Image (spheres, rainbow, N blue to C red):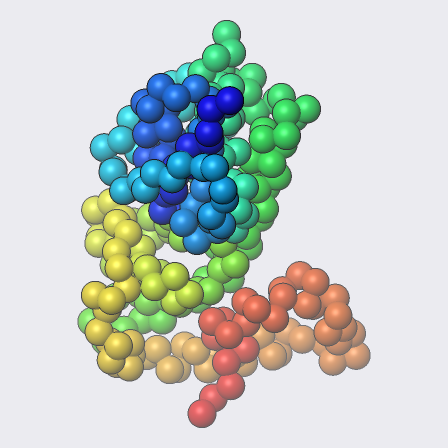
Length: 259
């Protein structure tokens, strides 16, 4: 009986897809390999471990293959599932890709819900989609003195790269930054250019102290509007929290108390 070889990859879409490439290319047999992210891995006896360094070229090759063989729905399922927090996700993504490449019609892979790995990927996809969809509505931009629109978010999952295309489409004529302060990364968009993902360490911490001349006025107007449309007699905190959980509010203008 052959020992299992575990490929340890970075907990990111590019890291996991690089792991998929290396595991497939190892020719060890799909039953004899497993993918895990470094953050979720626990060392096991009688297993060989191989460290996977993120390689954008390898990740792009895998994603292009998924897009070609498994279609847009398969690509979306892989990308969204990778954004979630689950120790099983890397191996499940590997298995659904293997399944998609072996089926006559790879697009059918996402419908094989009797397969545990497929079911997990689709469950994670739904969770990440739900988080990204809600975050798109809860993002609050602040105009800085240099005209850049700046926003902070703290999503439960790594959905920044899933949200950015939405804002690129909506704010194509604006310079903006969406800063995921939990994961210390930023989506940066320059007017008329594609958005890019960057390390938040590049951001000057004093950068957002300088608002534009009208930003404070607009923030007060927004808070006044939110307060004026509220009906005190119909106030229902429990219902409000089900639609707008407390964890989102620390980055939303209307819930930030004036100093």
